Length: 80
Image (cartoon, rainbow, N blue to C red):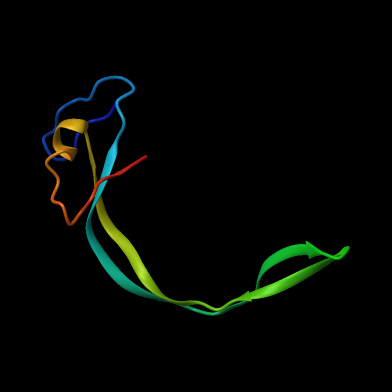
């Protein structure tokens, strides 16, 4: 059970939460040397993480079923 962050209604037990992204930001991730370790051919190998750019979620709302149905079409709710 949780409270809907849009209307403040207490949800029913076992009701799924729907998360709607409200704000995002562009973030640049740095290159990381030897970030990934895995076994191959009886030995341990390391690979680099190239980094890059991507979006990070700044704020998202946890909505109940009543408010998730009325969420804007551009911000589709993702179920948890």
